[in-house]
Image (cartoon, rainbow, N blue to C red):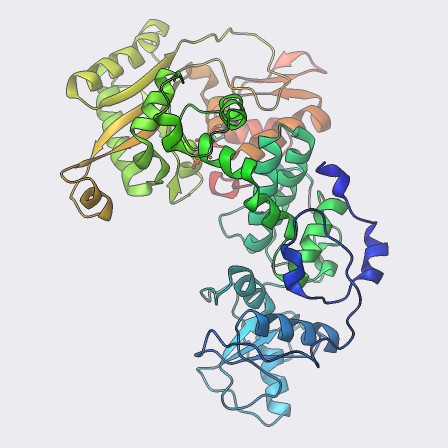
Length: 528
Ligand code: DCT
Ligand code: MG
């Protein structure tokens, strides 16, 4: 079972580990302890060079001989050319825990002048590249920053190492700022795959463990490059640290590799990519022996819901992400239609796009109006009707409101709200036919886009906005924080103070944060 694969305690494992053959990690299941191979790099066979244009040199300073030998060996196995000595042919210097200034200083001592073409890179670039099996694009986060003032503090100019005095990091995402600038993709991608696999297995505990780990790592302003960097970071238990350690050492996690190769994971991933297909249906199809969508759609005995039929019909469009330009174009359609019936309505694009994401799986909108409840109730049916007449409506499911005023907020962190809402697939006509996709489907001049419209009472708009902005992890944590730290109950409708037994009103998200005693976190800092 998943949780049973937790390895020996951290301290114990530390002694047993040494740089080892990374190719052994391809095996499935938990990590095995492998025998010591002292000086493995000395006796290594020659490796084929896959990337002729790069010549790497790994700096031993602050890294140590063992780790340097290990990284050199691993990089060579992955097809990189790594020099033992620094020479004119070197194009990339890779360093760990050194600022750009420190590397330059070292070069000066060696009497070597660094040319402007020489890349000074953080080891995170090499680790990511080895993980990707090819050199990844060099971005600002990989480049060591050079400050000319050497009298500055040792870490000055090198932004991607942990600051010397780390401010205590909260276990709650609502007390951390998480922008889309993720310095730890190599780890967070791994944890998101492990979390998804746990979700497919309906293992809630394990799902939460991995999602919290991914979330906290996304908030760090530096890249984790050694286990030392994980000290003091919450939400990283033994199991999680074991995965991090393996990625640092080998560039990848054997457990993630095993999940990606697992037939059940692959099938669930494929099945749930169809709009309207959840875990129950995936489980059923998997048990019935289905492994491909074509076999499913051509099976005469299977019955599909209206939602699934639409999911299959527009599959190609729906799996290709919605771009911001497409989201904006949908926004124009929504505003036109809504304002035709309710000119004073407020319309806000919520979800990932409000958090600054460039792509999404759908476009979410929150609609509210200070007008009468009856007008409110009639709006979505009118909008649907209009789009139907215009031939823009490919699918819709209108869910009537079950909202009751003064109902206590839900105790569940994951429940959907009671507002009236509509899940749609809209036909978005291309502004101009320029994508390869339209060539594939000759003559098709539109794309099917998933859209969620939510209509909420005016007094609840701040809560609804906070709830529909996400991310999911941020929402879970702010509700958990309200419950455990403030004895309050928060959901998409309201905030209730259990001690004072009152509902706390709010006109804006800022006021909700203030009621909770939290510093305000901007939407683009909620990408937890
Ligand atoms: N939400 C939530 N709990 C859920 C589902 C959603 O709190 N179980 C909130 C958070 C985000 C918002 O609703 C919109 O949901 P999605 O569209 O699923 O998420 P997203 O962040 O917009 O992601 P994507 O970019 O993939 O659409
Ligand atoms: Mg969304």
